[in-house]
Length: 419
Ligand SMILES: Cc1ncc(COP(=O)(O)O)c(C=O)c1O
Ligand SMILES: N[C@@H](CCCC[NH3+])C(=O)O
Image (cartoon, protein in one colour):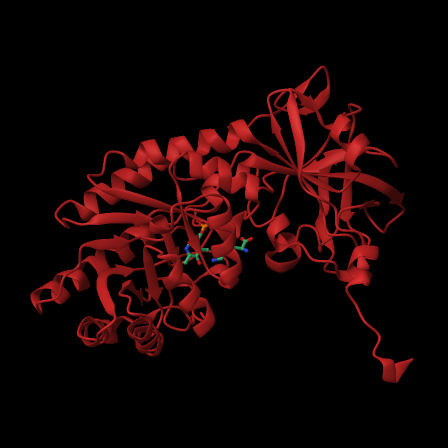
């Protein structure tokens, strides 16, 4: 459930008509509902409350906007970060460093040092090499780094290949059959305090079975590691729970996910950690766009909108589906190809889609754009960086400015020797 509904034939975000935002901020623009965000944060947290000891670290990459992070910090969420930049955002949002988990295969020495000095809660080590490097830095700084070892369980998540992370051929984590030995070595390395195993097998999972298989497998590994005499006090089960993008699609609900986790982890005796992203933010946002032109096509007309693959990359990258709806539907329907203005054929949001009939100048939205939307935007074709707005009841505010090409141009330099 979200808070984007039609009132008197006009799509609103909570109590605010989207045309009012478009008139002031222009398009394209991401619009987030604070009520939806809060609701999702609470539903997920409450579902997990059936488990004895839980820490939730929001996957910042899914929506790193500072206002979004502030709302989640107030709901007791920590942060799963994958770069120094995301760490700074989490800290700027007032998140407790102890609730920050640092994932990623390529953390640099500078990032590791900064995170150690900030006192983050856990480093999710993705290799033995990373662990040894972190240990050296920790010893030099007189610190101890609390760590998890990320294991690659070699389980097929059944999601799009480009967002699958738990098969042996993916770069993430250490090979399952090497994990016990690596954990043992790192547990004896000064500067590190090994406390957990971590896993994350992929994103936008539509079924719980692959997660259950992976948790079960890594649970067995945890027992082996304990039997070898090493402590495991935490287990980080990652994120990955998917959301429906297409009206009518059915996805696992947070309470079903929690029940599965409870069943698998009943005798683990650990603090369970989670890194949800999309399930918290996916439904909290829409991308508002304006129809620039309706152009004759072969078969279906081309509906050219002013949003493009630089603003919402998911359809171009993963052939992802985002529902498209007119902000003020005229009544009839049409079959159309929806595209952006960028000079790439992959700048296509939908082909031969049955949509609300639209004309030049009409506003429309791509739904379920709160996760992996603005965060993946760029300025390709020297387009502006898309702005973001948050709505709260009848109030709304710009929470990220549109960065226009002139500002970007001002950061570029022509060297003297070219002048
Ligand atoms: C390590 C890690 N944790 C958490 C997430 C969040 O995933 P999702 O948005 O699918 O919940 C990701 C992204 O897939 C990730 O790479
Ligand atoms: N960017 C991807 C998700 C990647 C998850 C990263 N671990 C998407 O839009 O679906």
